[in-house]
Image 1 (cartoon, rainbow, N blue to C red):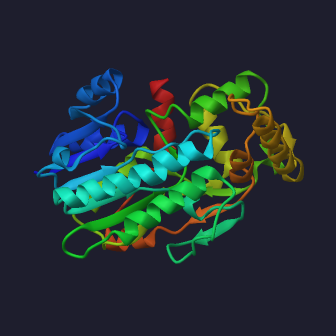
Image 2 (cartoon, rainbow, N blue to C red; image 1 turned 60 degrees about the vertical axis):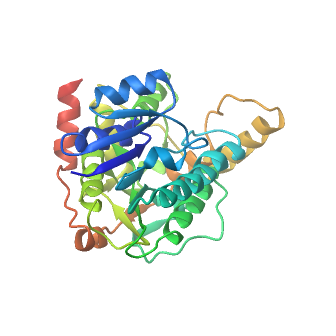
Amino acid sequence: MKKIFITGASGFIGGAIARRLADAHWVLAMARSPQSSAKIKALGARPLACTLETIEAGLLKEVDVVIHCAAFVEPWGRFKDFQSANVEGTRRLLEMAQKAGVKRFIHVSTEAVLFYGQDMIDIDESYPYPDSSPFPYSETKRQAEQLVLRANIPGKFETIALRPRLVWGPGDETILANLVEMVDKGRFRWIDGGDYLTSSCHVANCVEATVQALDRGTGGEAYFVVDKETSTMRDFLTQLLATAGRVPGDKSMSSNIVRPAAWLLEMIWKLFRISKKPPVTRFSAAIMSAHCTIDSDKAYLDLGYRPVITVEEGMRQLKEKR
């Protein structure tokens, strides 16, 4: 049995990880509010009242593994908010974990650390970081991941980054909810017919990789984690919407229109300091109009990762729970 501290356990991925690990380990989790505490207790974990800004090494006393899931993932916001949560929050957690004598630090990252608007086809961990990204989420998550991997001290403080892509499944309140809202309001449009290839990661597969990373994997390394299957955005999102009883339709727009329009909208929103997110953001327009297929052989070899659920089975289970 290990003593494990999790950030982001009141959220989608962190909550699924906490629920799985609480059966076999002593799980502590960061709780930023009474509501978070209640969610964490329901998962079988013990809430600790703290934030990334206030956490101290004393809270991590005798912790064996830190799993860092918390992040600012909003589609729209000020760059300083992304920077504060994703970079500075990660920096402080690393410092406190190392000071407390934690042996292993698992960072839940994303393929978006490599993304600046381009296609990424059959990529693996050798794919280089960009010098920068125009998207605040990508840019700050890249900086955070690099902080984590550079902090690795072999045999003393081992750090690993997991990179799931397009995480979906039970408990998701972001991807499917946003799609349903767009369809219900008649705003959903495919980009270029939705013919872009994509990898995905069911939350159960993300959790499985995290469980394997408790004891396996090389410190200072990143690992892609994806479902075995690859599909088109059109096929995947159509199946996902079907689990909620929705049909996306055939309306489509060209990426040559959507991408520039998203840039223009963001400029207008910033100029007039509009806090509500624009109808489409640069990041969402770009991510929906770029191929992204991923090779996760490194996770197979080093972590012993094997998907525990197929896309077909995951979709069937979601539909049954509706």
